[in-house]
Amino acid sequence: EITIIIFMFIAATSFSLHYLFLGKRKFDYFKDEEFRVYFFIICLVSLILFLDINFNGIYTWSLTSIKDSLFTTTSLVTTTGFSTADFETFPNISKMCIFFLFFIGGTAGSTTGGIKIIRTLLILKYLSYELKKLIHPQGVYSIKIGETVVSDSIVKNTLGFYLFYIFIFVIASILFACFGLDMVTSLSASAASLGNIGPGLGDIGPTDNWGHLPSPAKWISSFCMLLGRLEIFTVMILFSKAFWKK
Image 1: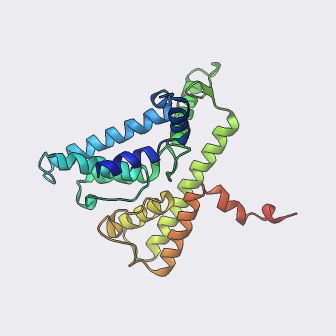
Image 2: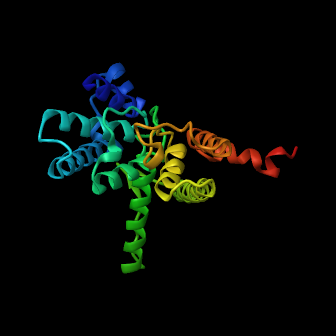
């Protein structure tokens, strides 16, 4: 299981960083801002899960609790879909953290699904930029990822992707609820499908499966998986009239 954790972590790390390390002998992992955030998220959420499940008596302060906390967090962030513990039985704080992990994803340029950390990082920097502009309207600010200034067009594309992702998540959740699924199952099914996570919460938890869902719900989840895996715009553009015009 520790071996799997290591390789899940590696697979969700940008392959550009792996190339620099293997091809040019440059260990630039922690120089990359996105990787630092990725590493921090895994450490922080693993710690929260570890403390939560032990303080609430789910585990008894053992190495197994450390392993299961780290394995669950890494599996969900990297959208691998493996599980060694029934996180459906975890306390509410842990389940809330797990639900948000359905959206985050790993780093750009990796094998992971989800929104990707770089997009969330860019959105947070954009929000900080807007707050600064409100306080100092005449100030000159720029949005940077590392030492690179991000252009307005990239920021707009990222905002559009984020809004589109949330919009599809909401619509899919409502559609799942129409088939009689409870709120937790509907929300997690939508998030897990878009993020290509695998297990979710509720009736599609790590010890359950998706086989009991009605056929239309399976079609919807399959379509959401395609949207999430192909970065949404790639699929949605096929439904545009302008795309098919000569």
